[in-house]
Image (cartoon, rainbow, N blue to C red; front, side, top):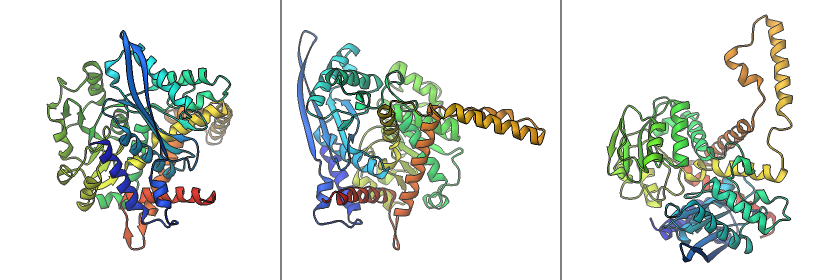
Length: 468
């Protein structure tokens, strides 16, 4: 899927939802278009010669500030893809009620072709360009990891920004997704995958939605196929299988797929991919060379967790999953989505499903601005109070507090507990808002259109209160 096709699809999704929102003439176009895109070409002397790299940072909207969005390193990225992802970030942040506009960045590079030392030099040089032109700062533009980048990339950027702005006391808030030892927050690495789990759990707490999808109640033994076992796909698969009793029957990767109707050992598959670079040669399950064929395999839940446009007008007519959960950005094309709707297949959209990453990034940003960890002032107070309550109950009843629940009740909440609690609350709240927004008179909107209408209304409201 080309970047232009991706951007066109995002615009069509926006326009489809915007017709349900009342706003002044011309404002729809203002919201839809990208505010600014910075294109940078810089050189780094590596391997005995000057290497030139091309990168982008798009700011889709600053109706609130700062703008927020990841930076990806990929050899096939382009400006249109970056602008499409920036637009999705605007709508995603608005849907979740976060105080961020939308932004996205990319560097056209295959990180597998460069050593760690070379990637550091490239990243630091890219950071200098972004900071110099106002596309990196705690108050204006805050990146995070994305495809091809990680915690290490973020700390390189943070350190370079601190050198560039040594008097900025909030410098650690210039990016999120940092290591814990460098201003990160516990639970950020798992955040997007955890959010996918919470989104699915909330769907299954809604009997009417489950019935409408043709699924039976409860997550236990639901058959799940996941496309992409990167950070998001791995955590989603791990949580769903270990905590909710789902059967991960298929995992699709670049070099093929693994399939077992009895369920896969997600940890074993992940270890194999880490050691060998793919699923080829994995023992204990069927290895399928044409991984894309598994997209249309019979299952209860299909989770695309990698690239854009994997569900399209070619394979959408053959999708057998009853529920598609978009863990990736833009995994379903506009036409593919239309076909799934016409076939009665429920789609939980990326706008909502993969918002866990930016929600926990928001928590990290707040932590960096306040310069204090979450729970520091309350944990021991709550622990003491709970222990006093437990002793009182024991004294009144003559029974000992149950050992299997004692630790969870008596110990004060750790930072990761608070992060998960906050994320769960926001995912639940957003789902309920989407459910309410789906009902327009006698019409029942699909989840994607309803999510977009919530986001657009909030952006319209932000513009109206400042007089635009």
